[in-house]
Image 1: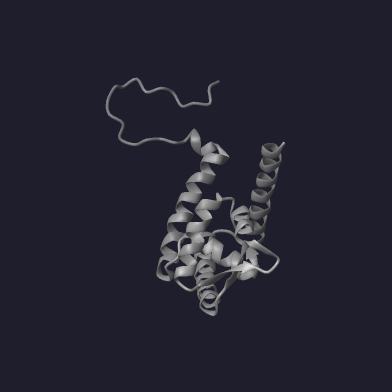
Image 2: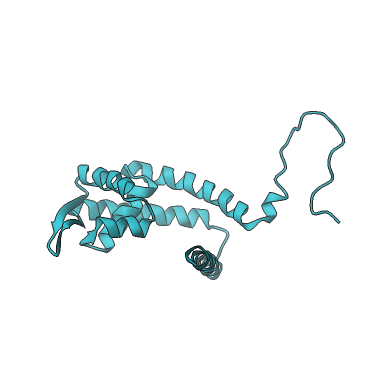
Length: 163
């Protein structure tokens, strides 16, 4: 028996596109869910003048004072030239400082300014509220299981990709 719905015999225009078959695939469902989460997160971060990338970078810098720019790029899994754009944006807004690292004159050491730490704190509160809204139907136990499941998927795929 086929997994696909029967093929309609009509040649009329489609009134509603069914993605029923795709919705049974975890990857597709994760992507659809991510699209909704990302759209709401974009709205949540806009009042702070942050995007998902700049927010992520700011948190990592706040949590890891002295982080090298190359470490930040690796942690965020983005190319170094793209990282420069993100760091420049945060530095222009006086949210971070970029100084030559004491231990390596070729490396930049990144630190959050007081303004950067305060903005990060306010944005974190807004993002926590965003997550609460997004996960309203899940209790704490279900949220923890979801995070564990996503981490297992990430680790298994990372192993496969790195050989």
